[in-house]
Amino acid sequence: MMKAVFGVFAAFFALAASACAQAPAAQQSGEIAPLLYAVRDADSTMYLYGTVHVRPRGADWANDRVRAAIDESSEIWTELMMNPETDQRTQVLALQLGAAEPGRPLSSWLTPEENASLNAVTTRLGMPVGALEPYKPWLAGLTLTLAPLIQAGYDPASGVDRSIDAYGDNAGKTMRALETPDQQLTFFANLSPEIQREMLREAVHESASVTTMIGEMSAAWEQGNERTLERAVIDDTRTDYPELYQMLFVDRNNAWMTELTREMQGSGVDFVAVGAGHIIGSDGLVAQFRARGYRVDRIR
Image 1: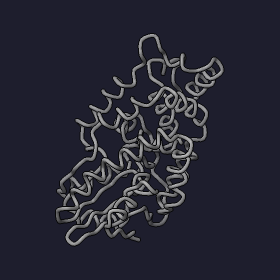
Image 2 (image 1 turned 120 degrees about the vertical axis):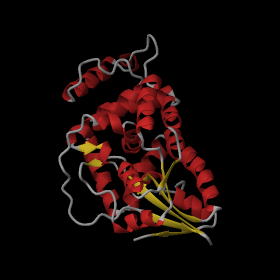
Image 3 (image 1 turned 120 degrees about the horizontal axis):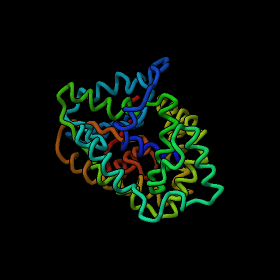
Image 4 (image 1 turned 60 degrees about the vertical axis):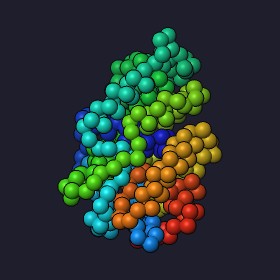
């Protein structure tokens, strides 16, 4: 489950995380081949590109086919607008919505044994004891998920989304967003107490292994291995955490489809870059476009 949660979270906090990242250059051999699809009707083409929100610094974010699809497009869609105003709003709102309620510090959500494990993890990560006490479980859990990845050399500022935004800006493309920071962070803030507590417990339990898990997911993304990505990001979340799956994937995908199908009613070429988990699976954008009668082809 933490892979799916982390993917969304990393987009939120990219600016803040990149300020403390000291990542080495990536060691990468061969061309990457991430998932790229083309949705077509009589007079429109929409490319769907599955992204990951963090990459090792210096790692490539696309191949020639992806760059050619962007060059062909007049508009580029990402989950959020990539600009200083959005970054600032995200940071401010995260601290507001993620602040612990009066009289309900983070430690009150856990047993004494779980608090001992939490303190061991924060100490290993170089955080002062009690540093997460002012946070609600969802924000504390997501912070614990991101921190070891930053230490391991992952850099949200090198995420695929930001690289696409920079490429599009340099090419003079029109940039559009599917969501706002308020919408994205409200998803987490509205999670039930039970899901929030479980997120925190899993973040503590999996802190030592999250780098390995994300590394496996990143390798599957580079290879365009749709089935591995579906297992890693979709299947477990849908089975074990249906409320979280509904919020992270189903509700958001359905809202995006309303906007994207409206865009397809016009003409021209668009490029849509969203987390890979949103384009795959039975509730993903590819399946939904096909169900609506559009021709959808994978670009290999």
